[in-house]
Length: 120
Image (cartoon, rainbow, N blue to C red; front, top):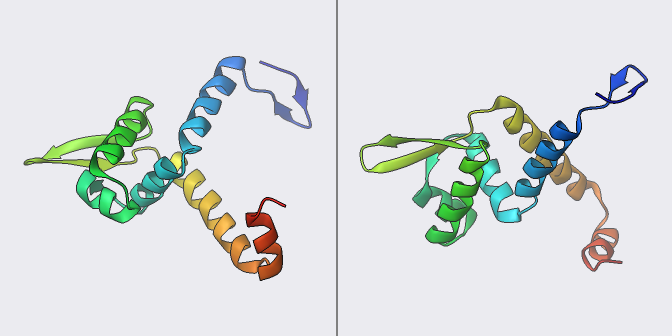
């Protein structure tokens, strides 16, 4: 454990490495969109592909990575594989982050938003 500053103890290197890996997986807009969709409720790969506008094989690959990382789980329902987020903390992180950024994007005046989008 690290130093205690302001009542907070720094996390271990292992925890920081694991957190960075999770944030790295969520850094992909496609995977973040999938996590956003799954934070609203479970779904199969076909519905997810339709919702996020991705090709079925690409969405399947993203789901495989998310599943290997332990962010997503699945279960079989007949011939369908149904995916869901089993960790309420990840759901909270995704919902709060995306929700806050959505709210901010709607508050920024249009000229400033255009400059931001242009990378200025």
